[in-house]
Amino acid sequence: MAVCAKCGGRLTRRHRKWYQRFVYQQILHCRKCGVDQQMPREFTLKPTAYVQCPRCHTHKVSRRIAPDKIDPVIKSFSSVIKGLLGGRLYHCNYCRIQFYDLRHSMKTPAVSDTERITL
Ligand SMILES: [Zn+2]
Ligand SMILES: [Zn+2]
View 1 (tube, rainbow, N blue to C red):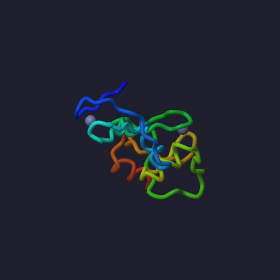
View 2 (cartoon, protein in one colour):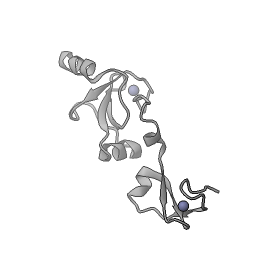
View 3 (cartoon, helix red, strand yellow):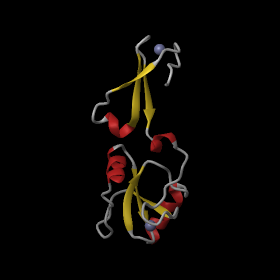
View 4 (tube, protein in one colour):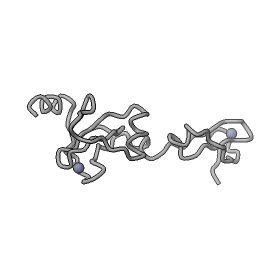
């Protein structure tokens, strides 16, 4: 059983609203002091992890400013949600797919921008 970081009281699970389900794994509520403790989902816990292609798992992805009309955008649940949460658009050079991700590319944005021009 989890305990409150503030008063050490017992925490109970609180019902999440539909939009909170996407962001939080669970929300715990302290009955003693009334504090809510939010447990974020995995992708928000790893802000330093790098972007990976969801299909071939390569790190060699390039940043896209806007979706391009030639390659398909992956419509998987996590990709769509990350797009809604303000994720960036990336393109896999091998699979030729586009997807949204909240993590950063291994390359600096400046490098992928110059590559975009030469494509
Ligand atoms: Zn408490
Ligand atoms: Zn790929």
